[in-house]
Length: 148
Image (cartoon, rainbow, N blue to C red):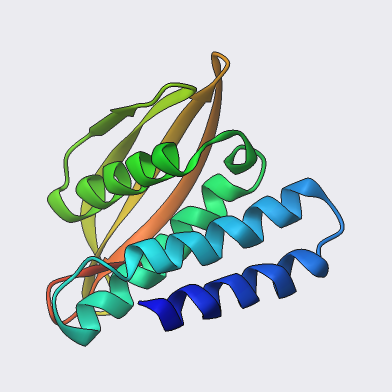
């Protein structure tokens, strides 16, 4: 765990140093933090890698224009809601002190021999909605990973 923290700190520092705007910094920090948070979920190596990738994608989405306005707890709540929506196929809502939102999963469909689903992540900050759409596909081990 300590090694992960050191690596994460180094990656965040390197990534932020190369960013030109707050939005780019938010995206980079969100992706790294989301990847680290996500890697704590899932069973086995494949599950942790898939969850880490999901966390990175989610962190990147919410890290851009809106991630800078969310605290760590709100980011964790948003990540968990997205995980529930993707994995369980049901709408998942969350509420924090500064923001709230929900994730709406779409129906599953076949793509390149596997099951996939689109999902919509909507986050409200100061009453203004920010929406991102993604796609996740099911891995052979039963876990889900964002693909776009």
